Amino acid sequence: MASLLICGLFGFLSETALNVALTNLMEVFQISAATAQWLTTGYLLTIGILMPISGLLLQTFTTRQLFTGSLISLIVGTLIAALAFNFEMLMFGRVLQAVGMSFLLPLLFNTILVIYPPEKRGAAMGLVGLVTMFAPATGPTIGGLVVGYLTWHYIFWLSLPFLVLGFLIGLKYLENVTDVTKPRIDLLSLLLSTIGFGGVVFGFSKAGEGAEGWGSAVVITSIIVGLVALVLFILRQNVMSDPMMNLSVFKYPMYVVGAILVVLCPMILMSSMIILPMFLQTGAGLSAFTAGLMLLPGSALNGLLSPRMGHLFDKYGPKWLVIPGFAIVSVMLWFFTTLSPASSVALMVALHIGLMVGVGMIYMPAQTNGLNQLPPELYPHGTAVLNTLPQVAGAIGIAVAVSILTRGMDKYLHASSAPATQAEIANAMTAGAQNVFLSMIIIALIGLVTAFFIRRVVVSREVVHSPH
Image (cartoon, rainbow, N blue to C red; front, side, top):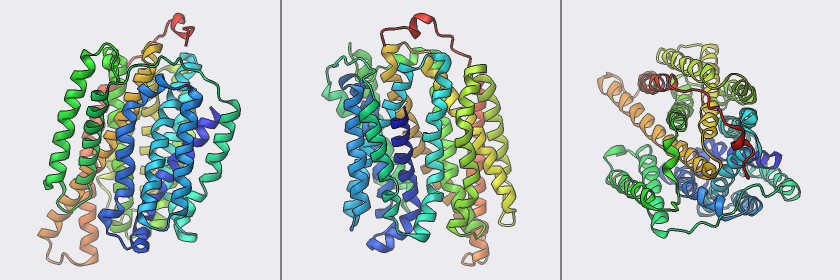
């Protein structure tokens, strides 16, 4: 577990830390914003394509084989990115990093399901929350520090020794804990999954980038082709005797509730992670470094509380965490709709802390409770689905948030008598950001209603002591 957690932590850290350096990279490589954005879009796209097949891989390769393959890809990708002297080389390194993370994350979840009994999984998943939520949230702050005092290369150089350390620990101590069943690989399912998830993630990512937004022919075509392929993929899985992604996981009610909450949570989190820094810089007039520091307390507290939330889940079940969590998130988002350029720094920091604490109370308990209801033979498929959905939801959340922000800003500036002044641009950013937070309140309220249907899964001892 130590090796998996170390590698996951620093894999995620370099993922979001680079986002802060995109402006710097545009100057260094003489590239446009649309080209630079591919460092993020390409990463998300690779994960969106590979994550759905992770269930197949978990049954095809041993724990050690999959760990070794994912870490070699992650380490080589990080090294190439650290040494990169042009955009193409950096892009190649990012894709290799994404390949490594696509295999490492499902392996981490599946290993926990296999080696921990249900009554202790909450605490173990809490440690995973430290990786999957704390690292991405603190990445921009660390990235801002590194870019401010060193060069962007050090974002990767700082991660590299820890990845190597985790790899060496894993080679020495990691055991094979899963059954290798060698399922038949269905090429048509593989193709439909790649086009489906890849098309949807690509389409929504592009919608959040360019000036054309949702009106772009590329965006519309990608999303339609992706959705059609996903429908065909689902139909294909339902008629196969040995499906690539076993969708019978959705026959389990608490898994379905968990999946819905796991989709809604990243939409709120990813939207706030992209809109808040923009508001703090353009709306409130703060520097990128100051904005990063303001978001650090909430991110740090989210990570520190994650193991504690896991223990509370083991003790009291999900309902007493998830329902209050969505209530807190809804209240914080409502207060965010009242922010203005004159709002105090202390208020904005406090609201972000509240938001991150609320999210921390939702994500891991909902996910763990859902996975607990599955029989052991469905663990690989259950983890594949619950690791794929947040990636797609995150891409959708970012695209929708950016488009709402842009539309709100354009509407404000169109009615303004002095649209070019800095004060009016700040006001326009505020108006756009408030619209985004209003839309996120709707998502949070849907989550709150859904949370009332969650109940603790009671697992029989026979499942705990299964051959797995």
